[in-house]
Length: 481
Image (tube, rainbow, N blue to C red; front, side):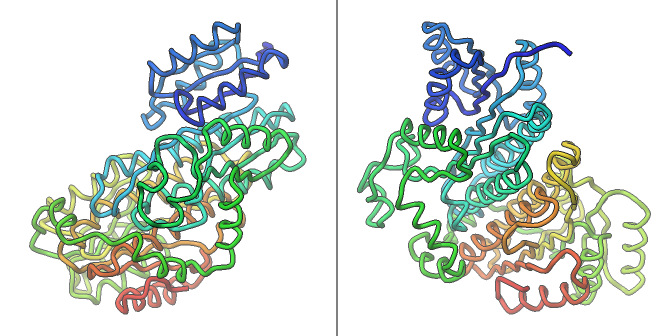
């Protein structure tokens, strides 16, 4: 085996907290004979930082890449190997922020959050964690957010992605115990990174009047907490106390309390981003051949609407469509692999070609894996995330604006209360759906659109679960257990 040099790999390195992580790592790297690998899409910022480190003789390498692009993980892994390095410490810091109602924000911008915070973070973690465990040393710092503790109306996708990060990291902590690998979640509060307005400029709410801390102080808290073996680091006491309080305050109570502060999408915003609806409403069911999907399909058959069955190609999909058609239901099977990046676009195109619009969307597709993160295949876990998080978000964000504009419609998602249990990627993905559903229910509460969130266990009775979720959706209640 060829000896390689250990490296500290930091994403989102060019500015803010990431740049401070680089400087902290560079201060220690020479004494430990380690290199520093900086990853960012901002090539100019990387080059400037590389020059800064080169003056001090640090073994530093810049990898300019957009982590949301296809193949980004391969580029990073290849670059590290090309320099004769291996990832000893991974800092998943790269992040984006987006404010505004999900029905009004640009689809591409919202999916970039998913691709960066969920897919890229998971990809890099799954690439480098097995090597760390085999060497029995190393570690991972994942930068989360207070959004992991609070479903976020007007930040629905952002907070949901950070919920995923938090629970995925917690699973890593449990599974890496005794392996020599340290895992830590950094939860920045109000760091001076350009994402927060200056004190007093954001409004009268308390959060805007809390003091800011520097990006350096935030990174330093995470870096030193990680080295001391802490698994969660809050650089600011207020946010630590807030997180503890949010564990005991019911989520629904919090959302009702803050609904007036966050606001809801208005008719003008939603209507301006949505074309006139097609003439025929449809009930769209993903994962149609799964037990839950079939149960919902049988319910949908009695609603006197066109039913669109979405699932992978195969005889099961065609047979289900034939069975519903024999009962007098107008039905269209749409064969598409939901793990594909263009799955949402394929479904939207199929609706348009058939002269349909999504009146109700049921996310019956739930890929599932049981086992430790390190033992399960990387691609299998990424495919699961592509179905349970990316495709779910993509389809919801494509169809939701039309529902809001028409002031009717609904979405049913499957979530989980806490995201703990076997199959960390699966459980964390269900926690993502919970956070997204809670936020969307708050955003759409005055629009005529209902969001149904089922927290039924994966082994629950499909027929009973479908009936309860459907009834709750029709009753405009956001949660069915």
